[in-house]
Amino acid sequence: MPDTTITLAHRLRRSDDVLFQNLDGEAVLLDLSSEAYFGLNDVGTRVWELLESTPLLSDVSARLQLEYEVDQVRAEADLLGLAARLVESGLASVV
Image (cartoon, rainbow, N blue to C red; front, side, top):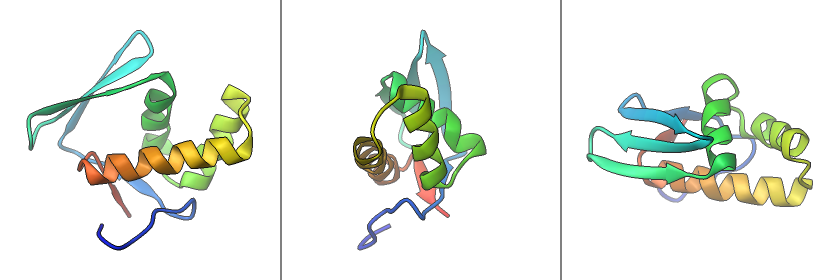
């Protein structure tokens, strides 16, 4: 997704080529196409889970704010940073 900044108005779709395993609240992702492993902390794991049913990033941000009692600015900044890394790594795509 070159030259496009991800915003809260975007939807992300998790790649079908990624296997997900939750290990005590933290995720291990295996990208089958690159055979690379990725780790997510507990909040990143929750984002990954939410992307399955709530791909609109503004909705994911709202859920994170409620579940983690985090302020809007931080939730949005952290979510957009993670979303950009997921897309850059090929783990998700913008739809």
